[in-house]
Length: 113
View 1 (cartoon, rainbow, N blue to C red):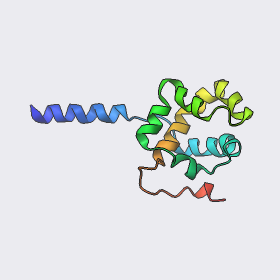
View 2: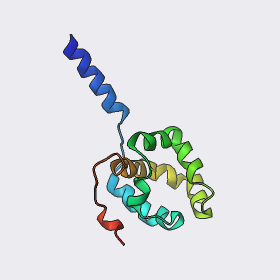
View 3: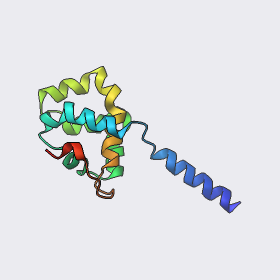
C-alpha cells in the first residue's frame, strides 16, 4: 500500500512539473525574437530564475512573464499580445526551465557570441 501511495505521489509531481515544449525550439525562438530586445544572451536570461520560479512566471498564459518583461521594448510588447507568442510560449518555457539557475551548468553553444 505504501509503495502504491509513493508511486502516485511521484507521478503527480512529475506531471506538475511537466513542460511540453521543445527546449531546442525555445532556444531558437529566444535567439531570434527576444535576444535583441532584451539585450541578453539566452544562457544569462535562463539563469535569472530557478525552475520553480520560471514555472510560476509561465502560469496562467505566462501572465507574470509578460508583466515582468513588458515595457522593456515595444517589439516585445507587440510579441506578447500576438497569437505567435501563444504558439511559442511552451517552447520558451521548456528552454528556460531546462537551463534554469538551479540546473547543472549546461552549455548553450548557439548563444556564445
